[in-house]
Length: 446
Ligand code: AMP
Ligand code: MG
Image 1 (tube, rainbow, N blue to C red):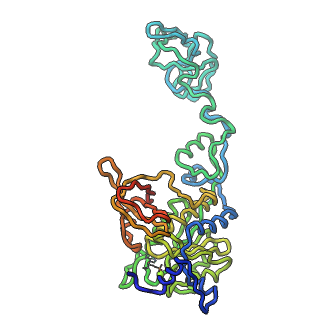
Image 2 (tube, rainbow, N blue to C red):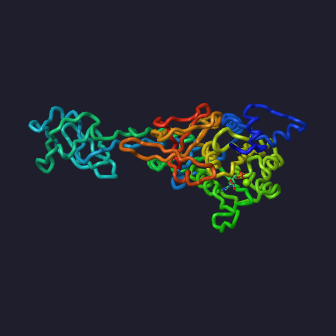
Image 3 (cartoon, rainbow, N blue to C red):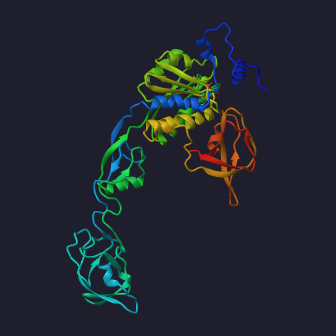
């Protein structure tokens, strides 16, 4: 049984949608109320802000492109390959001249020359003629297939016999077979992988427009916090969130930086946030719930318009989340508990970063990002709060041929569950839990 505090009393009333306004003005109530807003409400506000935001772009080159997002469509300027090439070592021929050939009935060719690697093929084959050609060599005029060296035998210095019958186009890549000049290679929004950089290089595209990385600042607040390098004295704990969150956001392509630890004091925190308002996104970890020192809401409202839009997100863990927009910058107040901060960061913040990074359209966010979910069998039953989406870390292991998912249950202040978890299980808002033995879909933790 939870102690009967003012906070859980308000929460319970809120859950029943009862609002008691006794002798207080509306602003006062809004400030202290932590509502259970469904995630969709957050998405709606974020989408309507992001759809009008102009994203910055920058010039990328082949050395800086890995993992970056294209801000333009890329069309091939040339044919690739620029000429038809052999895919084997052998002899370029006219396919029709090989018709009917077999081991017992070879056909004969006169070898009129050989193609040099990296040089134009200046020969012009006539019927019954062949030209020696290396893998990757340019097909000479008049040839339409290549005999593999293994399917031939040299008879004299300038003649061979062939034991194979070829179809036109065999053992070669046609000019422009890979991509033709003017054809679309990558769409705007495409994330450039190592293999893509090879394709761009092959087409001679060395500079292109990329989306600028989302500029994110992460502030940790709490009088009890010290940095990771510091000794934690009695009553103090080391900052976890600004490290894990910055690392994660950088991994998904943001330019995220740690601002450091700011004390739980109105003016200090206000100054710290104000300093970062030139960023695209500011995260404040801690001080987002309704507590004696939690003045985040007030100070955000004092920094500019429109200020705080929502306070309270119906996910577990992660309820005390704040969404504010201040003069064009999104500010998110994250709960201080590491597992809560991590969850909100993955569910909400990472999606905002993907839009700011140009990877997703504003309209696409909020839906599952899990293109390839892992399926595993649950090792035990789980009870979940109805009314809140719940995110539970799980360990994945193999039992004979089956993949098993073991929920790592614990308080949201624990970090080892996250560290030992391989994936996250989402229990939707309308479900009261999951059954042991159920096959569930998981999202890997990065
Ligand atoms: P708060 O959201 O500020 O009420 O903090 C909730 C809990 O999370 C408290 O136990 C804090 O000590 C803890 N906490 C807050 N910020 C951090 C942080 N950056 N790293 C680790 N724990 C934190
Ligand atoms: Mg705090």
